[in-house]
Image (cartoon, rainbow, N blue to C red; front, side, top):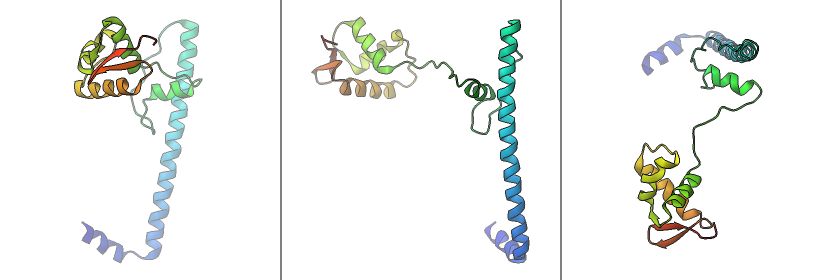
Length: 160
């Protein structure tokens, strides 16, 4: 493949190469401009849908889940540009969830025991080993909240 490209490049004159570079840049500029225009139109459509929903109370037609130039779905891009409001996430603060687990348990626990009880605190655990590492880091770093009873065993501080 490289050999073929070298052969073709040797056959092209300098003016041909410059023309190809110019055409590529022109195409890139058009692509970027069209993507920006599409993103603006999607945002405008989302604003119109929101206004219609406010007036009529009915849900607008579902938006296509195509990705924009920055990798967001059209709905997310529209939400980002429409008033700067962020979408609500379903993420839970791990340190708050760990604190909640210790308050419910009311006894010293190991990191793996905390991970087992995190489901009750609203944390979805998909990778147990990764979550155990994260819980261990929280326990080790939050010295004002948790105290180490013995190696690998922590409890909630009395004054926390």
